[in-house]
Image (tube, rainbow, N blue to C red; front, side, top):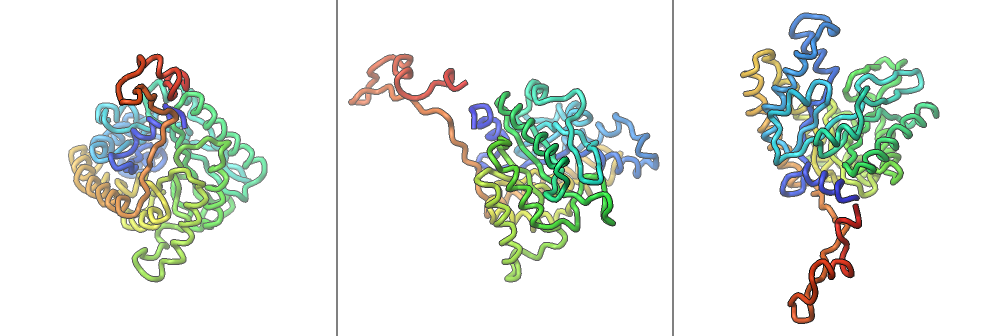
Length: 357
């Protein structure tokens, strides 16, 4: 971890070291929602409509979260006035328009967008979604590996944290095939865990993993019952697959109640918090386009949901505890009084910021 990465991740946590982050970078789900509410085709939904709704999400949720994830296309400009300087900001790198092939999905960056621009926009971290399933074709796997590694290399070059999100998906021939951002109800836990194991490898230079439930959220048993041990063992495998990297849970369109159960399992397995989207707000934007009603619901009910999740994380989770790549110079003599100017002492004891940058 470099100085910039360490500081960036700290900006995403609360005082206790837990991540309580909200995602409003969704694009297809919001476009579909607006189209249905307005009774228009999806291709007639305007940029202004999407941005307006994202502004509502930011206004209602930002005060309650340790960080907010937004996209550059529709979200950043609308959310900027509601972002708090004492909270973190993540910006999305990947385009929601991936290439669908019979052998698997190919991720790509948003056109005319880059890690360099994310850093210059003032973000504390870069978020990348990589669609992934271990049984995709060799060509698809090579592309996804290279895509994730390239993002990691660039984030390291700019000293900015790299948050990698992984989602298993159905192949096009499946009866359950879909192309929007949601949970695959037929996913295999082994596929989820193997995906985590792959991208926890050092060559990808990931700093924080954003992971889905290894079992479809609606199928999770109550984590407080005796029958939950088998499910917990699966979550524990996923936690171990992270190889010591900090990780958080994503909600993948799950209901809030289902996501709460997933969070208990995940935190018991070592998760350090959440970066959740629709579980927090999907049903709360129903009054759209009434801004006052939407923001009020997000602030009250949405804020209460964030608080509930924070309680789960505080009770069961593992806080992120940064380590710093430098040491404090020893500038005192045997009696505790300064024995040399700080500049001279720093040259022989400890590591200065100028040398590690």
